[in-house]
Image 1: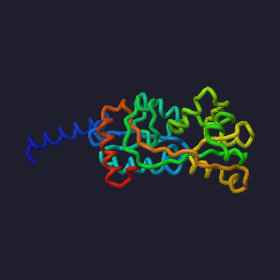
Image 2 (image 1 turned 90 degrees about the horizontal axis):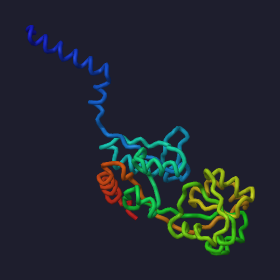
Image 3 (image 1 turned 120 degrees about the vertical axis):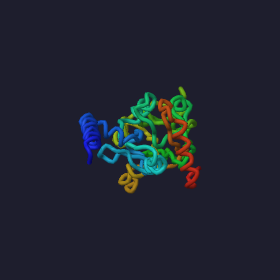
Image 4 (image 1 turned 135 degrees about the vertical axis):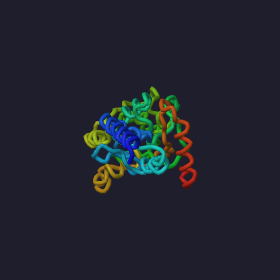
Length: 247
């Protein structure tokens, strides 16, 4: 190696060492954009908190498969459902892994095509209530819902009517269950699958009864605060359609 070549190699090594000391090499090597995804903490099997800081389920799996080649997906627990939506508004959360479509949410989310259907259930301790229409139950009985939840436009409208009785808001499904069993409400609205898991013992012992009162479509919501929102939705839709998940 002649002296000129040696000097060039030495200079390159010094530059590399300097870049490493400032963490520049990691920036150059890991230039893949990270997307933060999140969801409801207890809505299995579509989305739920694994207890270790991550949101897992079929929703996050779809996002990882659809976007994992182009992005680093950080599917993590970001607090209560209403906190997740607030963070989506600001762009701190890029993707909500499963969400109903409402006029309010469309102000800050771009929606994919729907990829699964969700059954809405009503859970009661008095079986006789199930013989009534949902409208009659909501207008005459005290209800329990979880904070930040939507149950689809039709049910939401019934809950917001001035004729509706008192509707108590629980911080999470476990608290709602406690309230229902203590008689602090006559009914609790929740996803059928998740509710059947939550009330598994009570349902088998005939302490709680349930019936399906609605069906809603689940979409993936992408924060409009992300400059690549439209591109991300296109990639997600391509995966949804290409894998026969479109509802």
